[in-house]
Image (cartoon, rainbow, N blue to C red; front, side, top):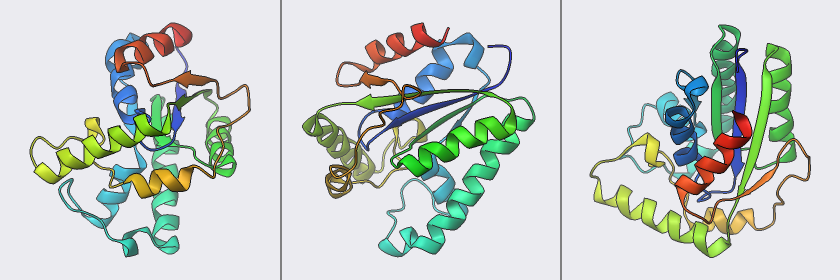
Length: 191
């Protein structure tokens, strides 16, 4: 991977996107200097919130989210245009959002790779419960462990009306196995 790449890790909340994104940066030498983008961190930074703050409904109002996505997409473009690869780990839940990420890669003249993490709903729910318990403890909070997300099982329930991508650009990866197994599978397909 000599040319910059926009590598997108998609999936519903609790699939393990953030863990995988940071793991790829450590495990794939060509991605060692890649910048990991996470919409939850951009959202918090824009509003001036640290990881311990629990966001409220008003923080997710359409006008706020519009500003967040504009800022986020601009950050991705700036990184790619200066020649830095980006690992984007925010889900790409809608076809429109997935298309926007593909468009950004095209506009910036970089390679595009994407993966969609799948897992049984209960597995994702258990991961969400664990993350929320860790956040509630207030100790050792880390963006790398997904603590920027306030997503609860209610958010996961809303995902049940959505469908994973059917495009061959977004191959499905079983993320119910351990993080190291998922990392190894994706690492083999991008090296």
